Image 1: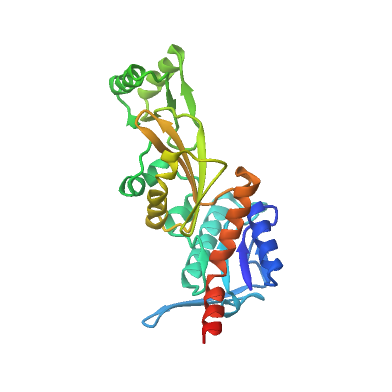
Image 2: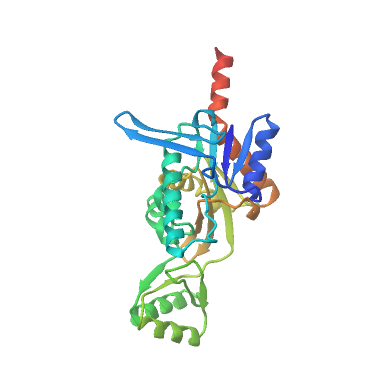
Length: 296
């Protein structure tokens, strides 16, 4: 059986399930695999890590798992602090269980991206740089002089304004007039700000396993980055990741990384290829076993 951790309304889960079923394989979408009557046994000892989830989908019955979303607890009836605590405990249990599975797990999470959905682009900076990919220039400062110097640097290169992004969430605001810069200067008297150079139109890519799938056409300089995109996905331990590239002053740069790709952002041909590639990742062990059987 193939377990898809997510929601039936998610086009990715629905598309993968339909493709698995078309191959005659059992697929189940589970928004909350730990909900009663599920019982999880997890053991770590000198022999290693083992687990067993008994809820009609025991570990030894699983042939592959796609991780799209984490379990959720309805906050109704909970005190906010208790709800936050229980949600953290639930996510910890899911993380431990997924780590113990021996079947293929597409996007087996690590703690960094499991607990911090929608993380800042700065989270990926080192991995992107080490993989040979650039980011737009970023300045994080509480110094008005440094912020103004960044503004002038952009202006000298013909770039109008800069993008302000609060460090606490993912919203972004274009600073393109004097009033906006005055408000930022006033803010700097109280806190540190993050400024980023603006970018041009976005080109979407999805890395699935070793394949890079582009949304529509891609320029030759974008295609030239495919090896670097694969290196990044490998370094980030993401077998399924959406990456957005756009042009900045120095050339093409990565402007967005999503470890939970949204296939609905892609055109129909690209979305179909992405879903097929995810299914291939999930069924790799079965395909290998079948091939070995035929060869013998």
